[in-house]
Length: 300
Ligand code: MN
Ligand code: MN
Image (tube, rainbow, N blue to C red; front, side, top):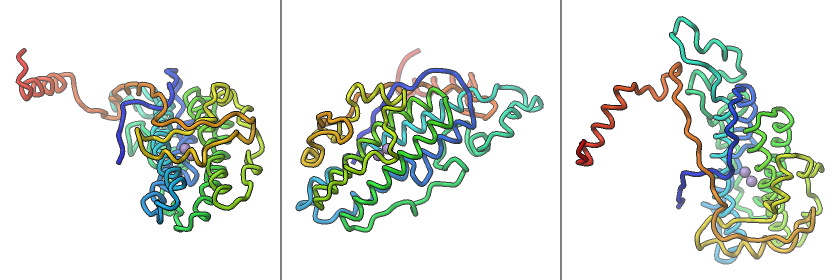
């Protein structure tokens, strides 16, 4: 089971810089084949279907705990997309064509199917599909796939970083490059425990270091690339049998943290009148407040 908090993994910059096409590019990291919905659902199904967990506990614990982190990544990328979309249009009467400015946006679903929010689609508007989930049930094959998936996800993040300099997109992608890098190394180390092959010699793939990115370097300087979280108050402790020793790139000491990282507030999204969202007028707000008061027996 999962526990939820009204927080995200990093502080998303409060900058107002509407860029609908940047939002579309970032969608690849949400609902693309190598996006966060894919990493989340691959590990989710591998954890549901895991066999002989009592004999293979560290591998099971690893997949369970990384699943928890990926859910937070889906959430974080969604908020980056929302931040890129924020302020794309201004309210006006229908005859003033208030949505006219985004007619040529790359992804019109952001404005037509939704109200300027993230969707489970890739950068071209293709819906995420369960066909992106790989779960053979063979432990080595699944770990090898996960290692490849994280390397592919890393490549996509690097390209999206190169495609947009939107501060919210960059902040989120920079952080996710670090955390994705942790998962690359974690699956490499898991393969080493399972097979004896020194897979960490392959990293980084692509060969460019995370230290080449301004928004990534600042996290690595704080050691974010050395920590793996259990994402549980008390379970999944045996990940320390895999996440141990030193980082293959800079030799830093690796560390398991029981629990979750520090969270940051989720900023409030303003109403978008020209999209009829949330579609509650000032008078209706008053009526709702009155009904809530009555239900709670609160006197005026
Ligand atoms: Mn991720
Ligand atoms: Mn990952």
